[in-house]
Image 1 (tube, rainbow, N blue to C red):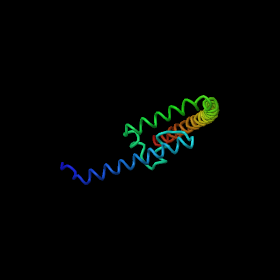
Image 2 (cartoon, rainbow, N blue to C red; image 1 turned 135 degrees about the vertical axis):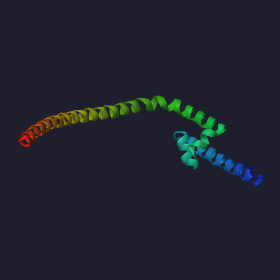
Image 3 (cartoon, rainbow, N blue to C red; image 1 turned 180 degrees about the vertical axis):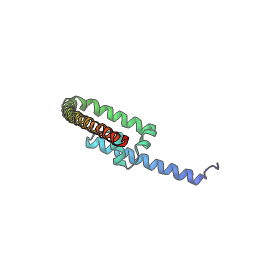
Image 4 (tube, rainbow, N blue to C red; image 1 turned 120 degrees about the horizontal axis):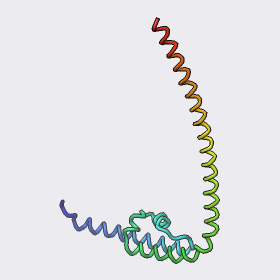
Length: 135
């Protein structure tokens, strides 16, 4: 494999530096606005991939640090309401699932009975056919 020419290395470095600059700027904007800091939020704001942020040690450290600062301060205030809404959603989905299971069990039982009847009719018809063929 042939090594890349120097001008391509320079272009790659310049593009990486520009991307890092946009990411740092986006992080600063999120912090200044008091918005939640996450890899996804920074990536959207900067127009970069989350993979780029995770692979950049400096950016990764900064985002994790800001996320931890804001996360620990706001976690206490947001967690109770978040848990109750999550619990309510889980309870609602569990109840819906239980109703669907009951409906499905009833339908399976109805289909089993219909299958038994059909198999009985099939057996009776085979026996009648066997009697006619024997003659």
